[in-house]
Length: 376
Image (cartoon, rainbow, N blue to C red; front, side):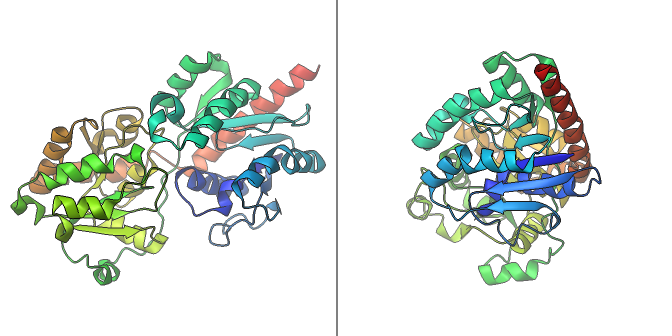
């Protein structure tokens, strides 16, 4: 089976959907019946290409935002036609408009942020999602959603039949086996801490998390430093200024984007992960942390209760007091924290990239069958 993949996110620093694309491609490449064809407007990053060296990769040198959009409607469908793939997969909400009619097409929908948290998006991204996602869902032979919550939202929004939709969860990535805390000392992390991981953008709700942390008594803050790891995104709040205004500079470490070895050490040694997002289609850091036995404080909305399972402590993301109460419980009550931690690895074990890839192959076959039926 020749599988074409929109791999544009593999040319950028890896975050959520990019990691999904990378891990799924690695798992798909292990399947003997699959011949993987990756397409990107710019070179695939060397640090993510490990694991699918046998894939056929076509790239250009178009890393500009506008050129990437033009690429997706010009070179991408031309390459797909030239390679005569059996099925084309869009792992990030989109399908090109001019796919050859005989080629099956599958799209993965991770979330409907443009619908449920539109004010947290860059205006151009919101416009593209709002215009391109309906086309992709309508024209796909099969649609994949990460969670039951997202699947329900897709059905409600686009009114597709259940037969056209499959739920395939993400896997649990152990981003690195290097988990020694010694390497964190040079960053000033030499005491207990809790962790935030993610792109620094409004949807991640960092401003309320910081307000909640600042409201804690000093004797609680001294029990757990707050470590923030993630690159700047759209609508980035000046966190350094906010931290200074709240007077919590000595309790907070703002690391920026970190490499995978550092991320592994951060996950493994944290008391808990704090992810009080306003909306998530999946929330990959929840599972990444739990691989290392680290529990999570997270929101009671969208997909997060489903993903965190019984290893998550749920709060109201819109309520600073609720977040603060959650922080106090997890920082000060070791029994609660240990109880959640004991369940974390078992919860993470439910999520497996190889199993997800096998399920995706079944979807590809359904899509090919549906496409062939349409051509009769």
